[in-house]
Image 1 (tube, rainbow, N blue to C red):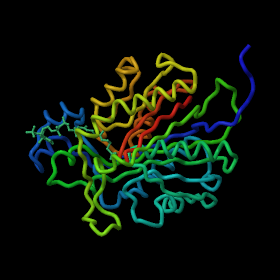
Image 2 (cartoon, rainbow, N blue to C red; image 1 turned 30 degrees about the vertical axis):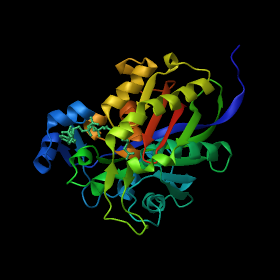
Image 3 (cartoon, rainbow, N blue to C red; image 1 turned 90 degrees about the horizontal axis):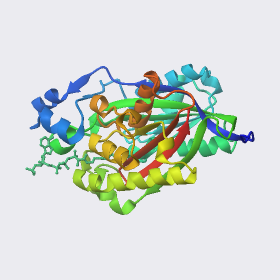
Length: 327
Ligand code: ACO
């Protein structure tokens, strides 16, 4: 007989996405830097990216995505408990983007804070929200990934400026008492290795050597670490839940590079139809990439109630992590 014991879980009750209207194709990029559609597609799988207009800040886009997630869940803004925003491109150092979003949404009873873990930020945010919900601190948390990387790009550096785009994605998580095989976050696993901090960073901050604020990436070094570290995070998630890759309905990876996504999918033995890919149309939107990919898969009906999703990301820090989520 199935175990009917109920336990408190963070259940996804709504998702949302926002992409700026302005689209730049690889041909558009080739007019600005010495590159080609062929090089970008072959190395990364990227065909286009969205770039924000001046009014499309991290807070503005995050609020749009967050509002959608709450509307889908049918939760009124004044009932929201907390807002966690994963971003490396906040509107300001403070107030936190989350607090700006709280005001834009009219979520008057919610507290909020930003979380900086680069491309892994959304997984880190899920993990913190999960802990707060299961501890009973709040009943609902909006987890938002929102980024305007176009404003960090050095158009003198063709190795990075073609890789990134802007956008925001959000999920609403609510505490529910569910059965063992019911919906919700089953686990999150977080990792960091600060000794690799210099292979991917933004060169502004408050240190005495600060520069104007460009993203700097030693792409080949990051690539070299990515597949193995991600496979480790994914295997830890499966082992802890006594699952195998065959149990995964959908892999929702961070969208940095199609070759990294394929590498992880291959290590898991997952066929392409069980891997969500949006990098061709969004490029790398850092902390926004997983919630954008998730919203895309939900919209297409691929991520449907009951399905088991494996989320994974790696980014600056290095930071990386995985999450297992049943819809
Ligand atoms: N157009 C044309 N040629 C280019 C371009 C470009 N845009 N960029 C680089 N090249 C050239 C280089 O100059 C080099 O030429 P050379 O051989 O004559 O010197 C050649 O292409 C190969 O360059 P590499 O940097 O070795 O290219 P690689 O195959 O490693 O691909 C890439 C680069 C796409 C960046 C890859 O390394 C990658 O995806 N890395 C991982 C990125 C990632 O996952 N980041 C983590 C998340 S991001 C975050 O956290 C913010």
